[in-house]
Image (cartoon, rainbow, N blue to C red; front, side, top):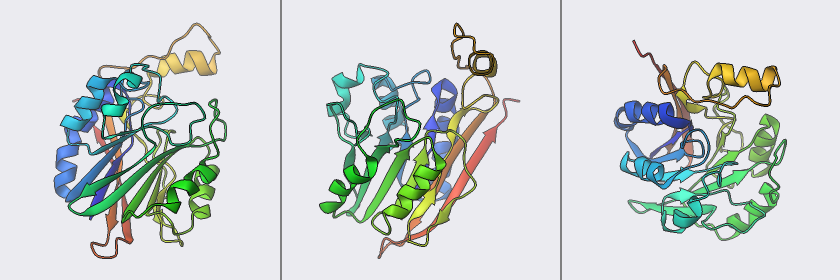
Length: 262
């Protein structure tokens, strides 16, 4: 069984990158299940219901979130009806929705769990490791994939090793830059520190360059991040290959496609 995990969709150009590439990638790699991180899909922060519907209609089977899970507050009105949407599991605040779900794919139970890291986080969360152990106690899935949405590379890698061979894959999200460390850990888990993003290629993490320079480098507090409507696009993802009988991870294949406007 082959599963596709697509990196953070950032704004309009992220949606365009997905539209351009998803169908052909699914066909090329014989994909049975598609997971997408959608926490940046609506103008760079959060997810509106129409963009949730866009992902579902595009052929996405599961949508994970991250630290921008509630930036579009209307999510509270529809998340309990959104069967393919998962918010972070280890929130301290009470929030609707679920942080871990099982999907039946032709008789194969695929669990997807969404977690937020703690290092450098502005959001107070429950400890992701100990929160996750509660999920593992009753988990009878065949394949278990974790979206670990975190800033620090070391936290992601240490978390993966701490879980030993209890999960099938740990995919890092949040930093929007695909890392060059896709591997099968010696614990048997498929792993990448960050899968990357889908969005504007000539940007800073999907955000218009000058607006980031003004805010981050020149410390102009009046500057606001901007998102382009036209640019080259990048599509970042990984293909996770599992044995059809044992469900053991066999391979993780990074994908990065740059589409030039011209």
